[in-house]
Image (cartoon, rainbow, N blue to C red; front, side, top):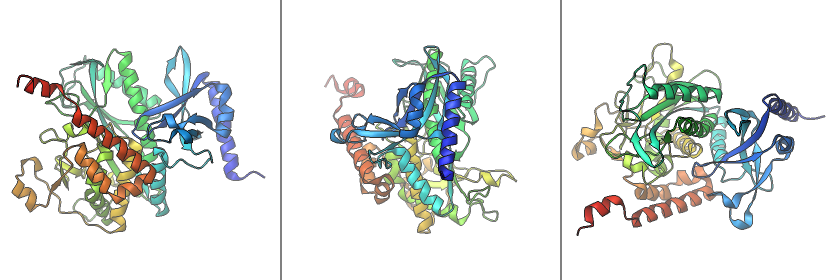
Length: 449
């Protein structure tokens, strides 16, 4: 007699096959993610789907950045049947569906370098304790006239609205597209800079949220392209204006409705567990910044004066703090959360959530205590006042971030030895290439010497 799990898998497979027929699907994209956050896919026809659901789909892993060497190339895509979804855009007037896949070794065991597996492993560590990690990302991005033309498409600012504002209509179209993708949008608005926008998605478990971030980027780019615009998640595409971040709201639940971060009698309504989690992230933040802010350009955003956090501290009213404790009204205890403000949308969300969780869990395990909250504008502090409050800074550039990452035992344990080394090698090469590149700024400043 088949096991209960086998029967459930059979039911899921039958449901997907029925859905493909009902939705008149012509193409099925098997999606996965490389180590650096790039969405990858192979496309199969419906006639291949049943075999794929049962046996997976082989592909060449040596061609994917951060995966395997050429003599270890065979890898297997294993569909996560719960992620089947008809996409709201067509291909040659034919309907398209997607299924997110896990990456396995030829032995059919999970590939240790699969970012999705890395996050699953950390979530399992929390689940053993009865804890469930929820996150809610706020994704910022720019819309330009084209890939090669960074002219603004509007001149609006923070929260600006006009009934005839093209950007308002475009964001509405994007939200509609995301809802069709099963991504619940909590809020959307114009950001500080011209042509800059933000979409906040509703919190859910970290794995689902990471899946959502990956397809959200594709959806926003596709929607913008249909309207003749180019969407970019580059952290700092324009000098002199705000960059784009991806603030991440996070909390631990007990598997039901109880938020383990909430404590009624505390000034900030934070539980001891929340304080330990917070302390763990503050303690390890320098070592994981290379994952949260992974590009050379990321550090052009992390400067004073543009609401991007530079100083390692926390508070509630203080939006210059690295971690903020958002307020919530009476009866909204489930909304108690910690907002980490340094990540940007160029990061790999699976790896970002994994190292964030690892840092928080380490804080809980070791019962770390955070420093006192800082409710003043830290950007106005001089060196003496920073020293008085024991406030350190994030790495100033990717080079410093790599140095901290290489020293971080926590980052190595969270990513695993394979991915840690691959990530370190590629990011070190990226930094060296940047150091040797002659920029337009240098030419304009020094060409006449």
